[in-house]
Image (cartoon, rainbow, N blue to C red):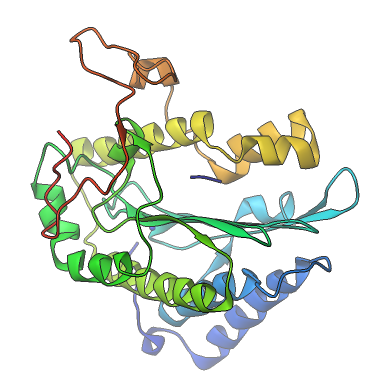
Length: 323
């Protein structure tokens, strides 16, 4: 928690009966989740409902094999609920969501991973809410380097800069991010903290809708890669991303507190970051040999691995200015 054969975005490609069956399947899986009473007026279920409804308008959502095992869990103390959904399509390897609801907090972890034949960014929404504060990450996480190379950034993010600037006015930069973690974010990332309010919540919902619709457009127009080397690059890049997140995800403590160490580890590696043990064999140290998790750690070239960015490191044109 932290912080997609060919696929048609047209109802014309499916009969009305098959689409109705698909809607029934999605809705029935939604109802398998549950929630507990809390003091919050905020509910992240409508965020997930929106994403599933939008995706269903464009393609056939199939329940993931993970859905049978990972659906609903009560916290160990009986005061919290974890609701999970997972789907796949012919372009999406895994669309999955986790909502945590307790008497004192709500969490949304919603991520969509494309299949390796597509180099589309990874959609990422991680929201943590208490009665007083919110911590938010919303982004289209780049699959490939956009700091030192421009081709991938030009392909996917150049046209999206105005969208990022629009919401940057509402959501100021949330504070320090390390130089290692910043590599997994795009110039349009919303990384912010704010005091809980219904007004901010509605703006966040608007941002989620806009970002997800843009992501759907990207996966819609993505052309299936046939070059084996490029497919391998995409697969390794996604595995690198999963390896980082499974190791450094700040939500691990929350999961351990609610479910215990063993189940928390299983949820992290088999559900939230599914593929970390299957898509590749490299370890965290293989991908990040000079990272030791402490600010100020030096790599062999003398670079400051733990350097932090207290302000947004991209300018208004999307150029990285943090180096």
